[in-house]
Length: 298
Image 1 (tube, rainbow, N blue to C red):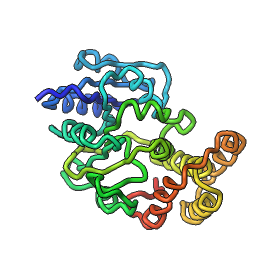
Image 2: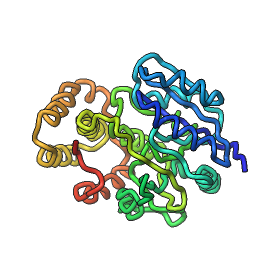
Image 3: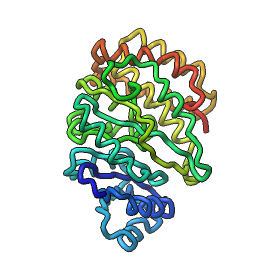
Image 4: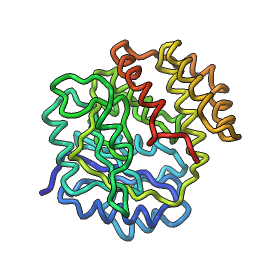
């Protein structure tokens, strides 16, 4: 059951064992998708290991850690209509890529399909799934699943052309909540984002991670997205909520300082989303404030 519609793109940095496990699982998929790996300047032998164990994988080596922009680099070379992202510690289930491609084929206004995440090694539902399937974003009757205001980069299949037209991931955000800005721009371009319960991806969280740095970037990027795309009053409301609720420590303080230092850039680049998109973002505010699955911790 080969399926020529979707290419898989993976970014990695110094997680060679996890990446090889992911590539082993991707190589077993019945769809036999082309796979691109952007090695973000790993120093643990990742590139040579990929070349040795998976010579069929297209390996990109930019020579520095590009973060999420490593995905952009790969998508420039993708020739399939759809692109599926996963991280070096996650992998698509058999049939999932065909399932997502089928939805994108049937619903031409859908720009992305986010999968149900199964957490390994226990095979349990990720808590975020409940929030995705109960998304409060208003949806048109024809949409095949819940409407989303954003997506999870490590568990989503997107239209390649839509991704490129929206500009991909912004280089300034690097990693950590980098999806929110792109998701808003996709919605502003007229695309709907949806969740598909029957499309499945597996995630075995890597132990090789700097959770404090990721939290700092996540807070900073949330502020930047809010200031870049939300109207003044909702932007102020979300900024104040973050200031009240994030951990009161050096990482949070640095996140706010980094965000504030870039205000001249924000003001130059600020482009408020259309009212239809803002209504979707506003519908998410209560769920975001009360989320148990998405918190700035670490």
